[in-house]
Image (cartoon, rainbow, N blue to C red; front, side):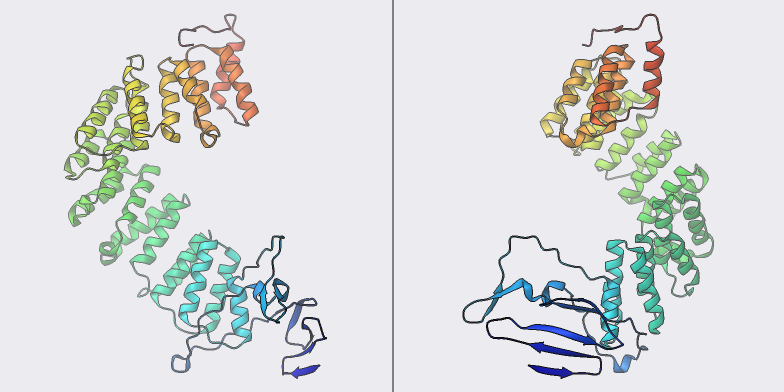
Amino acid sequence: MHMVNSTSMEIVSHCHCGQKAGFYAAPCNKYKIVIVSNHCIQFRLPMLKPHAYHPGNMTIIQPPKINSTAFNDNCYDYDWKGIKKKKKSHTNTTSTTSTPTDVLRLMDGLRFPITPDIYTSLIKECSITGDATQATQLHAHINRSGFPLSSTLLNRILLMYVSCGLIHSARHMFDKMNVLKRNSISWAIMVAAYMDNGFYKEAIFLFVQILQHHSTIMLELPPWIFICVLKACAHTMNMALGKQVHGWLLKVGYAANLFLCSSLISFYGKFRCLKDADFVFDQTSKRDTVIWTAKMVNKCREEHHMHEALIAFMEMGMAGVKRNKFTYSSVLRACGRMNDHGCFGRLIHASTIKLGLESETYVQCGLVNMYGKCGLLREARRVFETLNDTNKTSIVCWNAMLNGYIRHGLYIEAIKFLYQMKAAGIQPHESFLNEIRIACGSATFGNKNTDGM
């Protein structure tokens, strides 16, 4: 038996013949024993005040990766020569993952200096996990450290708060940032954060501030930020600002960006300004799948433009542009409103089978909806029955099938289908339930039209 004394704790080891070494600890006042067993010891170090930042005396040390099983002797066995080897176990062991706070507590307890690179790694970890508590504690630790923060590190902290859903904390930090350190990335993070969380007016307010007072930052903004602004304008019905953004994009030459062009086409389509949308489309020299699909979606917004959507679909094929599931979903919506008894829709269905897209969720729901609106309920039911397990849980497909029955007066079939929806745990749309209730009270209740069946 031997004894090791230190200023922090006293560890005594004992070993007997034919037994593995075991440890026990006598803690001092500075450390807290968490778990003590025959073969494993775990203890929690206190989080001390971080050392002041001294660039000249700093030693760069990478943060250690802590794994609880690395200190657990139960995970190993010994052969007849005394060599340690991994123990074979049939039980499932769950490893404990260390948090950024645990890493900081360990390094502070060992008095290791924490470099900006270590803070950057911990900030990234919090951004990925989205742990708001860890993010707040990490930022507080950085503030106590005392070393100056660069614009890059400040933006990472800002993004960490946004990723954890702490929008108000991010805005508070954004307002406290030095004007010189608040660059285009800082503004872009806040605008995108407001947009993603549904604060459209706040996103527009920040963008207007950039537009009026920060012309240099305006030129440094990434193109995707204008997509966020156009979406916010569409949600708030602010067409004037959207047109102003379009004019600015034409002025600086950003209008050639395909993603921005598709966003402009969608923006004008939501305001039913199809001529302006066609102008953006015609000014685009290189048209990809997204551009063509955005045009077709706009044509499907108006009843008297359905033929133009089908023409755009055929022109897209002649131009050699690849069609995707969203393209077919849009053209199927147009086919459902045509008075051709589903003739063009059948051709589109055959095209999806040829390209292997018939099992996509958007395509299958579009086919059920198209056949249902055209009165081809047998075909609609056949497509519905072929839904895979993932699409079976889509409420859109169920409502489309139910709508087909109600639309053509097959109320008995609709009621039977309602029982299937209840068994599958699908809640039908309230308007469909109201129509069935009204039909049940009618004196002529029954299946009015059985041609499609």
